Length: 241
Image (cartoon, rainbow, N blue to C red; front, top):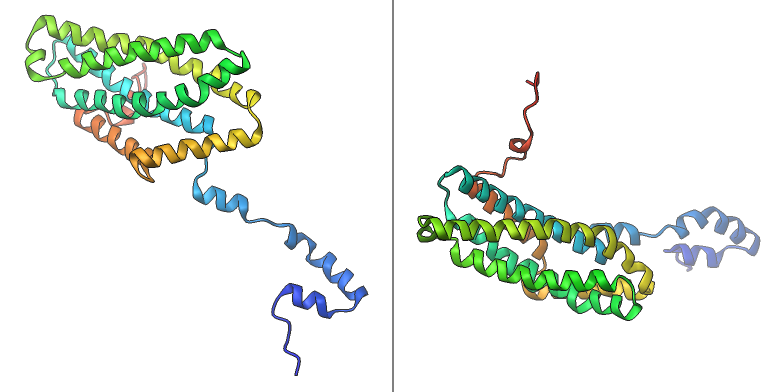
């Protein structure tokens, strides 16, 4: 006794040649559909440039923490040093020891080899080094004892202000010039492989949900400093309710 076909392939194999042609035409649209885009979307795959840019989003939020600390220093207001110290530690571990290392190990050499944006790469690398020095100063001075000393308070303020002044244009230039140019100097396969390399490194250092954990961490810092509410940054305009 012949069993009923269980799959589309079985079914097509049992039809006549003419019938198979008609049925194949009828099934063609479904056969061409792929679940790969859906799977990629579920997996949260991101390109190398997008990965680096969203990490810049974490950095931007830390710069807001620094900016608020500077505002309070200028106003002579007291503030807990712990959130700012935690922000500096996040910069060291996630931005300098991870994000910037990706740029230095995977991006900068490729631009040098392609002889593209070499002058920009030189400046960016030099700024990475200066940034590390500023982060060390901020980490060293962001404590209760330093905040009580006028000279050290000023030094702390200067280190954070210098970091903001340098890194706001630094990351903007990378986002608008360097990262978009990456696709032009590598093959499509190499570009995809970079994404895999970035993901592997992130998982090694911070776990499978490393980026999400960093976002949660910076959100906690914002809450401790009292600047988490996004609406608080909306300026009040005349006539607004």
